[in-house]
Length: 55
Image (cartoon, rainbow, N blue to C red; front, top):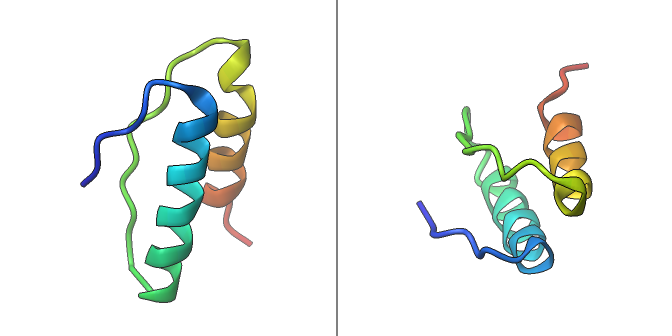
């Protein structure tokens, strides 16, 4: 669990670092609360969408 930064850029940096760390641990599940709506959050929401797609 971590407290997400309120700014989209800082949030993205922390999110990506956390995803890489959890991927290295081969976590079975990762739970993420959706970031706020709004155009400044589009890139973060898109990255989360792509990360949750299954092959």
